[in-house]
Image (cartoon, rainbow, N blue to C red; front, side, top):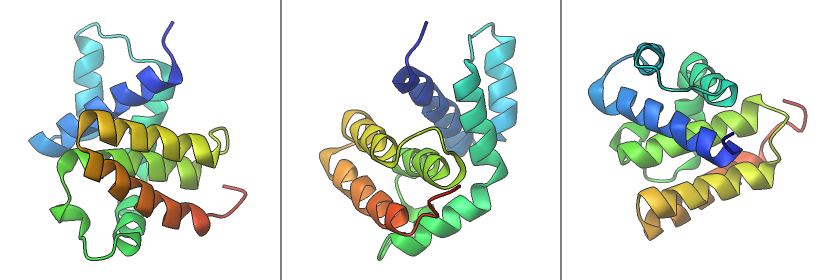
Amino acid sequence: MSSRRQERRLAIDILFQSDVTGTDALSVLADWSADDREIPSFTRALVEGVTEHLETLDRTIGSHSQGWRVGRMAALDRTILRVATYELLFTSDVPIAAAIDEAVRAAKELSTEDSGRFVNGVLGKVAAERDPDP
C-alpha cells in the first residue's frame, strides 16, 4: 500500500510528463495504466482534477507569483504548484498546511532549494485567499 506522498509524487510524474511532452495528461494516465502500472485512486483524482481545472490553476498561480508567468516557470515547479493549488482550491480532505508542506518538500527534493522557497511563497499567497469551504 502506498502513502499519500507517494501517490502525490506519482501524479506529479504523470503531469510533468504531460507538460514536457505536450501530451494530454489523461492520455499519459491511460498509457501508464495500459502499461500495467498501478495508479491509486488519489493519484488518478489529482491528475483528473488538475486537468479539469488547468486554466483556473494557471491563472491563480500566475496572479500569485510576482514577476513570473506560468509558462516561464520550470516545468517541474509549475507541475508541483498545479497539484498543490488544486488541493488548496478544490479539495477539502487535505489540510492547507499538509498541501503546502508536501509541495515544498517535493520542490526541494525534485528540483532545487530555491524552488522550495518559491513554491512556499506562491502557495502561501494562494492559501491566504482560499475559500474555507472548497
